[in-house]
Amino acid sequence: MADSNSMVNIEKYSSEFQAAVEKRQQRPIIGVRPTQKIEGGIKKNVNIVDIAGIPVESLASEEDIRATIAEIHPTADALELLQAMALSFQQNRGLIAEGETARGKTYLMNKFTQLIFGRQARPVDFYCNGQTDTMSLMAKWVPKTGNPEDGKRWENWSESPEGQKAFKAILNEAQGGMDTKKVQARFTSLVNAAGITNSVSQWELQLGALPRAMVMPPDPTRPISEDNPARGTFLHIQEVGLAETHVIDALLQLGGEKGKLASEIQLWDDGGRVIKGGPYFWVYYSTNPP
Image (cartoon, rainbow, N blue to C red; front, top):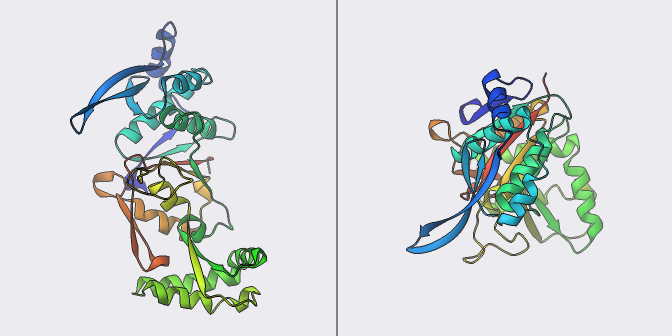
């Protein structure tokens, strides 16, 4: 991940940055200015959020932006982290923030998301721990039997060591070349092991946190379409320092050219289908010190 991410340690701040913050206390350090841009030959009103000298185009209303700014205490540590977020997003690079608990890593990420997308927006969260499975990050097939209890049985079994081992074997086969129907057939063979006795003739692919963030449309309650395009949103990988090796391996797909985030990934759970990231897709990692 190092090639496609910059890192900020929020425990340490330069004396120059602290002095700049103190000097600018008399005027807004985070501000908003309406402007216009030409898109497809048509003038469009947009808002620019200035975060400690880094201008970022926002999709949020001026009212939402000002309300969010009012909830951010302009300390040196908060402003330096927000500035790093704005710069990394602008450059299409991931950002890793390391700091002790309660230092504002998650709070400021939520506020940065609201500055860009609006007051109701939240990043897609993915939590890393010793039990985190790759399917929650990438994608998983869920049986459609008409019985809600079957879904719970499949969920519980898929997170067990036995289920993880079986899924890893299928994924390894898929990477060697396997179409979607064969992938589904392999999963169907595991249904009895999960305690599901009903017949399974159909499967539904549920996108995990990563592809979901890459293709998130403006209205996530509706399917992606021409008037509801795959715009992308922010993905927050929490406690990445606790991520298992297989999760790190999956995240390595995000390494793009010249240190930038990759523009697309492959879902081997779906026969290697390519998922292309929208223009507003961005990744932020947070972790406690080792």
